Length: 293
Image (cartoon, rainbow, N blue to C red; front, top):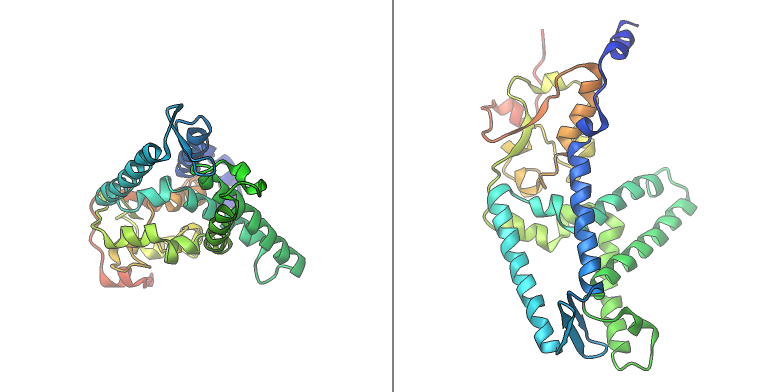
């Protein structure tokens, strides 16, 4: 009873306070998706292989000339990922990559429709939802290189080639969408590329130095909500491609989650951002909870 009274009298945090990084990340992702739609639609940069033409800032040019911005964009992308990786790890994955955002949303759908307790009809529905998502996501990128109407005009010479390319790519994209965030954890070429290139995490998430694992209790919400299935409390101390900081996408979900659990109870959140890791004993790094007397 006393706990309930304390919770009621406790000033409740705002939604922004407990979902800060979730909201910021989703905003960044949406802006990237909008850019991917608007740029080719306004013909700021677009190639139309189906009609052997291209546009740069609305001006019609040859396909050869139109390829130059694409080559420059690929080069800029590679350099951007390396620079971001050097500064703060896989920021690209956690804040920019549209594939990561789609996989994250798909993970939420998967938990509702495709789990061990789901009925056969629900699982079948998930296959269909995954296919629709994969087709739409792939169309987003094919719109950069062709007029999408070519897929409905068999008289166009590029019709069979575009369908062959689309269906081949669809196999990979469907697999990505279907397994959700596991794609980012294990299979994503960009993620692997970031793991093997030089990286440095200027800002890291971990448990605040005044706390230990015993202060966490049985909550484990930060682990359950980590998109990369890490233990955010101690992963910065682990040197491993799949369990350590190399796999972290710097999303801040663990910080938000800890606030969602602790702040409504007027308790200080355990998860925080640090630039220098506090010293920890081997038991903490190994995940051993110290027994309190």
